[in-house]
Image (tube, rainbow, N blue to C red):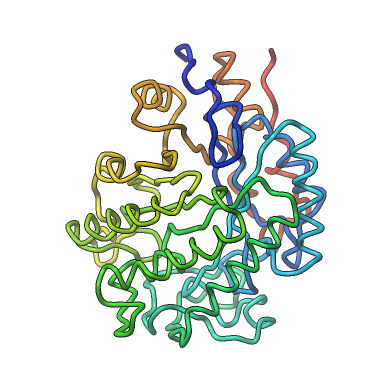
Length: 377
């Protein structure tokens, strides 16, 4: 591993000083029974507190039937207490941590446990089902269903704001909106999933309104300590528009969001593993995400995600093209990732694929979660 220097220069995002520019991105690990954070989750995050910034796994702002049971929430006081236990421990270990606020929209299922407990329909901008999906814990492993169009999106905006308030109570350093991977913010942005004819759909300005209004609501709580994750190349969860429409939509959205004083944008570039095919045709809109949207980020910091290894991140930061990187899968398998990078150690732990997430047969949730070895220094 070549010498890494630029990634270890401190950087300020919002009101938070980061000790390095290697972030741990949100990683769905499903260790929150009945949606509540645990001490095992605390151990997992503390192990990785050397990251410049940890983004929590996607954290549900309301009960939803996600593809993954045991995803955490942040809508009540018990959630706040559980997350505060984690945040305090990460801070004590010298780390910084944002909560990723998550509403899955149409990527939920009415027969999923939490959706049934919610007693509400599967909501989305329009009554258009995503193709694909496989709810492995539901009998028959069904795919996505046709959602119910949201009558008043302001209700969901308020849920985001309430979750932001709870994140503040829990002591997080900030929040990141999950605006990527085909969840509710990107469902509003994308013309293939948003066919509304009111002020929330149609034109680029109208399709952008929901995400921008969520950002405005959350910045009322957090000020400059708000970020957003975007994946303009689409693919995952049946997302993707024609190239020119994609460029026009995301350049507008990023330009307007950047005026709100955000801490950073996390841009997810095209990656084959987030692509899907229907009838032999790729769903993604392949294009250079960094080069396409970098000019529109003038105030916030910019972090790049998706298969970015430290060597590439070092070159991009040194060249002034980005302010930092987010790493996902390698942070699962290497709790000491930052230390390995600093000491030139390889990222060579073998992933425990069957235990990446919990399933009906997994009883020992620490396996494949907190048991990865650290290197010898």
